[in-house]
Image 1: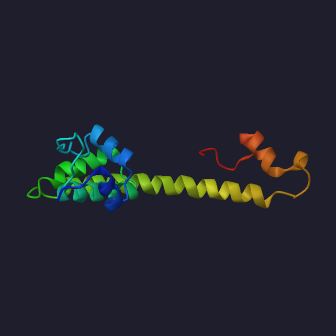
Image 2: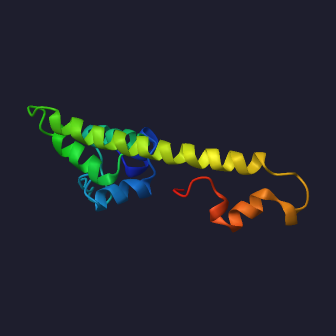
Image 3: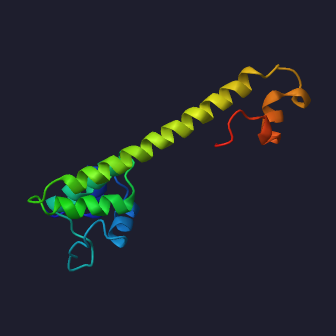
Length: 139
């Protein structure tokens, strides 16, 4: 199978500019070129790009994806290193959820305390103007 970058983009849902970026940062191998200089992709490119896209959707950073791709190329290795990467990412996600939960609580409190009067008396404006008015200071 030989497809263009446009067709690769359609099949995977990844923009052509993003495909080029992934090539630039080494996530995608440079494809062979046609006689006219156009990129020519095959089934391996489609599979690799689908892997990258799914990993990005799950929030993995480029460096982690690079590590996972390198490990994926060595199916004989134990998956302990993959587990470490996934657990590290899970801890980062848990941390984000914690921060977002605190942020949500603070925003909810601000909105609930609003008297719906004039802007000059607005609790939301007061809290935004003085971080000391917040219950938590880690947001």
